[in-house]
Image (cartoon, rainbow, N blue to C red):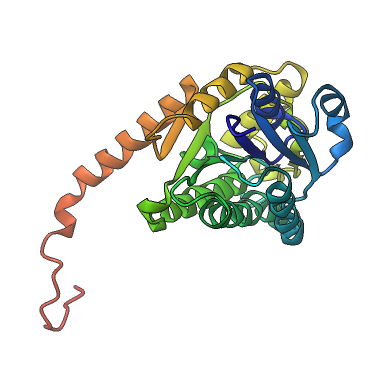
Length: 293
């Protein structure tokens, strides 16, 4: 058991979470697989012994369940090497169209931001206090291309992922290097997963019938009939390699569309910055009365 790595995976029922769980087990490591409906993994539980796969009920909106899941992992394995912080859901809506439907949006924030944050807090504490001193651990935060660049009809989903990116960057800078805890923000582009079923649609306002968002909505409808994107099984192999790097990156965009989005976003930021750099000159406070004319 000492030679195995122990992974803690949230959202293990579908998508990257399920694929990651299966790959880790196939590679001979152990998994604490957490999900809202443990029965979904009954087939895997029948294939692997309990010293390789521990399946736990966990709704990341419930902080007590998060605490209990990490406690169960400690009792079973005595350590964790990697936390794959993956559970998420989506709401498709124009920003304006969501007025009056804020409960759906707030629920998404509870999962994508607060749930992920509470898992992050528990992971860091576990790595520092339960693992042997200096062993540390790897926290893989599953963000999205949507955490890099705003997309029409995904504004609120963008907001959850932008928030996750921000808090993850701050967390990474707060950690004492001697703890040996590494944080990587994974930013996947479009992959063919079961994630479509986790997206709630809010009807658009009539004014948006011909707006840019309408094209996105029609594209999303088409994807439910004929999914397109990259192979998630290839992606999780990259995530597995990532978890074994001695010095992993803070940001890890993956997929051609994600790479393009990063380059487009950074190019735009630099262009705007360069174009208006002169506006920041001479802004030092002198104590004189400011003339607003």
